[in-house]
Image 1 (cartoon, rainbow, N blue to C red):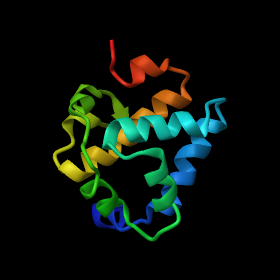
Image 2: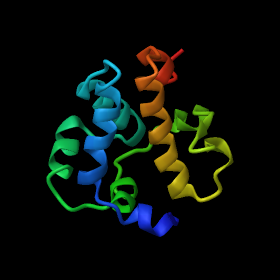
Image 3: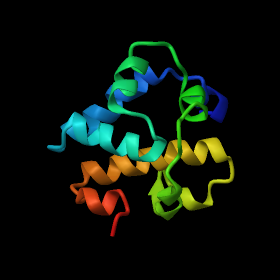
Image 4: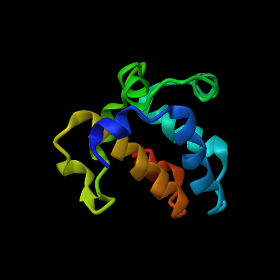
Length: 117
C-alpha cells in the first residue's frame, strides 16, 4: 500500500482497529486514548468527535494540537521497518502511533509506553 492511500484513510475507520487491537489483549479504550492523546495533544473528547467525522489520517496528524517532543524516543520495528529510520515525516508519525498501540497490546506499563521514566 502506498503512503497516499494510508494518508487518505479515514480516522473513523482506523481508530476502532487501534482500540480493538489493545482491547483483545486486555487493555482498555481509555488507555488507547491516553497514548493517542500523549502523542498528538488531542483530548479524549476530540478523538470521539473525530471518530464520527470523515477526517483522514493525514489531516488528523497535521491538525494535531501539539505532537509530543518525546515521540522521538520511540524506537523499534513496525511492519518490518524501524520507526526511527522512516524518512517520510507523516508516515513516521503514523508508525509512532502504531508502535505505541503495539506496546500497549503487548502489556507494557503505561509509564514505559509514554516514555516518562
